[in-house]
Image (cartoon, rainbow, N blue to C red; front, side, top):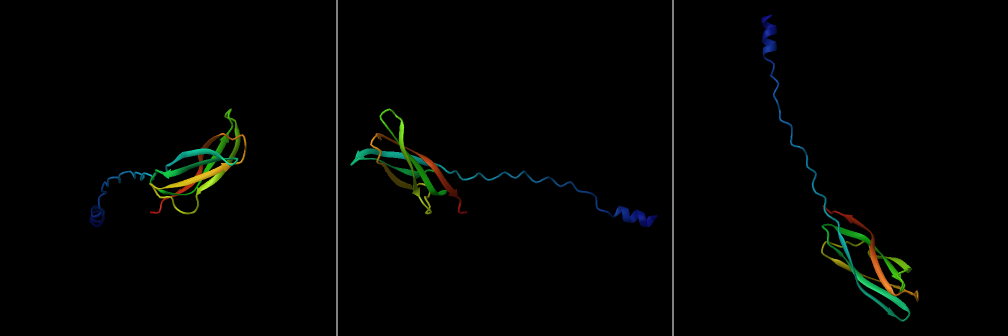
Length: 124
């Protein structure tokens, strides 16, 4: 019996270990693009639009596409197009890329554009 008492008394007592603090996910880098139309003009039977896309975010982007829209005097859509402003090269934060497109529709009098799509990535 003494042997059993010695064996049981020599066991380590449980120790309370504090739980680790909860893992807080790191903030994801922000992807943000700004499109600006800088010109809309008619020349030689074409209505032309020009502008640029600026990367105002925190990560590089690629494959930036813009949809261009032409409207008549009554604001009805008469033509549209999709163009790539940036291909497989990186548009880094703070950089901008120009774009231009044209329509041969004789009714086109107004120009507009909006961002269609892009791909972003973090190179860490």
